[in-house]
Image (cartoon, rainbow, N blue to C red):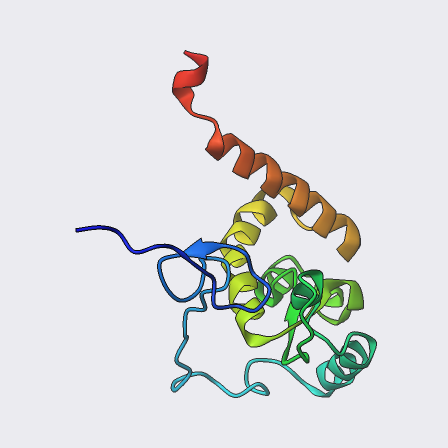
Length: 158
């Protein structure tokens, strides 16, 4: 039986070829929040409301979509360095640092959350010293090196 021809990803502006629907980058895994605590119970207080408001005024469009030339309003203000790590390493100052925040739409936010496990691994080595921009730059460099190492086949060097 012949294979179907590949189609473009359903995300406007994406040029990835897929069998159907969205490419891996734009697929969002739904997280059901029936048992999730309220934002206030999770630690988001009045200070967070103020900082979030400043970030939305500063970047009112999804930053990832803008890279692809797509204009979508911000739905979620995402912490680049996860909040639980900031608390674990006594860096609560990073929670309210505008350099540690990113404006996202829901699909892009789902893709960003995939990095949270990598952040945990990185933080065990790095201990989150310095300001947000320095930490994020070190994470990106570490992640690129890690991804590069995973793409090299051991048989190439043996």
